[in-house]
Length: 77
Image (cartoon, rainbow, N blue to C red; front, side, top):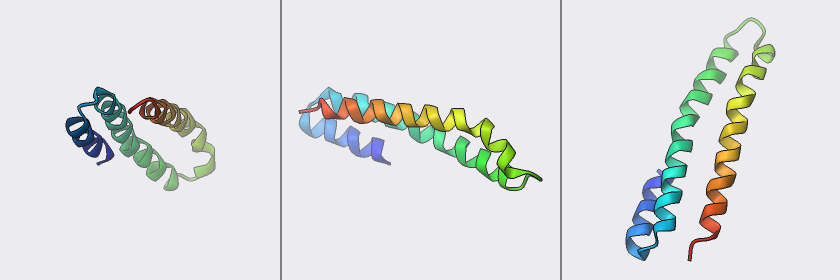
């Protein structure tokens, strides 16, 4: 949803930086359901805490992508 907002901002401001940030946030938004599914599967597992290690790389990749996206927005005018 945030990516749609950024796309509208890009049109109104004619600043392509917002469009690029929208693409980044869209990719992030597409990763979140995968993380949620992983958490859901782990919740039902016999030893849920043990499986969290497998989710950690995905969460770190989401966090890194979010940081990069927010930094790109900081350059917008």
